[in-house]
Amino acid sequence: MKEIFVLRELEQLRAISHPYRVEVLESFSHEEPRSAKQIAEKLGEPHAKVNYHIKNLLNVGILELVEERAKSGIIEKYYLPAARVIVIDKNFLNNIDEDMLHSLNQVSVSVFEKISADFYRAVENQVSKTKYIRHHNDYYLTDEEARELMQKIDSKITEYLKNKKEKDREGVHPYNIVALGIPLSDTICISEKLKNSDEE
Image 1 (spheres, helix red, strand yellow):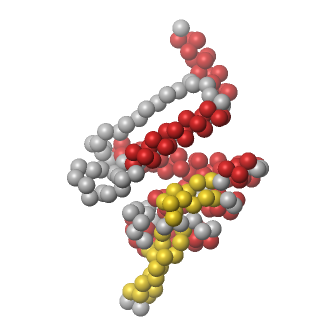
Image 2 (tube, helix red, strand yellow):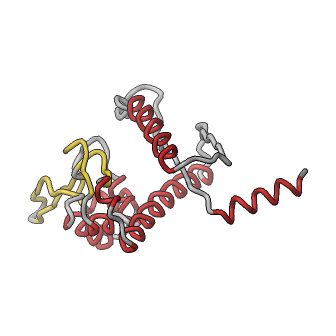
Image 3 (spheres, rainbow, N blue to C red):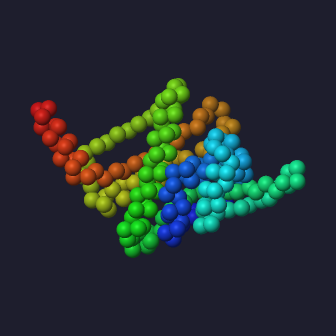
């Protein structure tokens, strides 16, 4: 498995713009190959549905077939993501058109839906471990400042989590670590200002 896989084609963006495919990718752990059957069992979804989405990810190189095993006369295929980290090529973003923008937005929505589902699942199942949330709102940044901030946060998080994939260490529990920088629309900003003025 490579360290980084760079998305350079619109079809690759479209392939991961589906929220369910984000779940399929996140079902892999510790570089251990999984079959469609194993993924289906982990996600609690029909085997045929998982197979369909695996084929889409395979076709654009985001997933790779790494092994075939014979079991009771049936060939089981085992897959791994192409890399530990998937990123979008910067040059690709510089030449963005409406179709690409729509796909990028769908990718963002898919990732956010997955994060939201994880959060609500933790609340509904009354997971007793602490849920850490830091919320900073109403700051005004240029696009470059926001990008720089997220790069610094990501760098610190990546550095800290570098050796924390071993689930057999004593006292560990699974966590999702998320950093979001969300540009607000003018409508939201204006409504917040109106709300604040009413409270004064």
